[in-house]
Image (tube, rainbow, N blue to C red; front, side, top):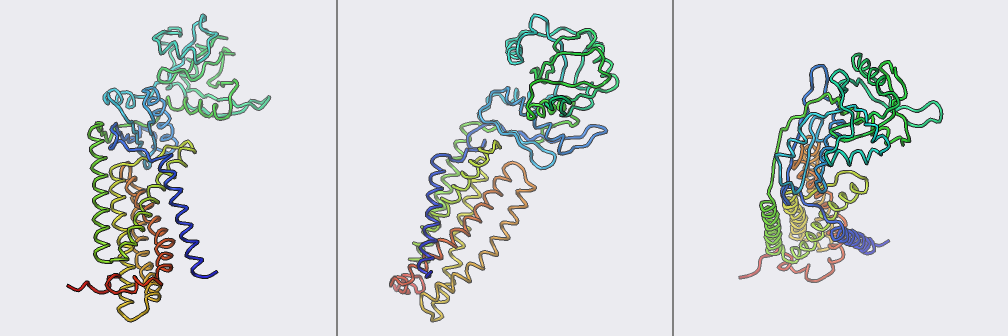
Length: 442
């Protein structure tokens, strides 16, 4: 295969990527972050209670509790995710009452066990929850000595029935909790006992024994995922970590819109200044850099949309375009231009040294690529450290840098190299004035 054919295939490959990026940007554009559309950003940091430690498991339990509470708020597209080893970030767009939100997500989880009144025993769990939402009380009022909360549980795990192998949830009670549960079972034998977390019924099994001895099991038509979910809910009622609000930021929709416009304005002005600079100093090479930067910015935005689409399909929290992210894009725009500058300067040096334009382009690109590759790798490692240790907007900025570096290398290798190889025979590149090797005579 000749070099010309390789260059054409490279250009075809990059144009396919550009077309794919444009399609993604039209069909699945990146979502705007809270600092651009308005909303609330809260970071909760875990503090261990006496005798317990903050572990990955307890943090997963905390995320489960927060998700259930946020879902009750009716917020559109909330994002709850772990940040580092001890923090949880909660992003809630369009919130109008931040005080209420803080009260809901900051309170201690309440797990309760209550018998269902006989007249409501035939209702499904969904129907019982609807009654609770309407302010009705379908539960028996218990005396203090029979009231059971999450403190009575010591553990909850998934198991399988001996006959049939169906999933079940195994419960273990504390010593005092086990005695109280047995007393409750004696009085409400063959009655439904609702398991309630934050005023929502998670399950309502029937008490089939009067003596459990500190052990009980919940059986039914569970899938393995439903059993795991219920066990997780039972664990969250006795969450061993305390969550405190370490950061709270509320952005109004007007301020968010102003920030978005300011960010876009900065990006457009930066692009125009860079384009004029490249054209003024590198003439025809500068004109080529316009196409390079256009392809670069399209691939960068397209990669953000692609990652967001993949995360959404995987039922994971997507990424949002934030103000620090826009800052990262503007920064990478300058970095991509700098990559072109390094290549074009090397080509000018080779040309001044007496080499033919084709040789100068090949040699200049090879040496220039090696130079900015080293610089890009250092920047990538720095961004990776920021992404790993940072939280919130810092991670967004770092992600934009890493994607930008990848797009910069991709654009340079597949587009700039191929374009220079195909355009080298044109007479305009041999003209010292038009190629920027010699200044225009006054």
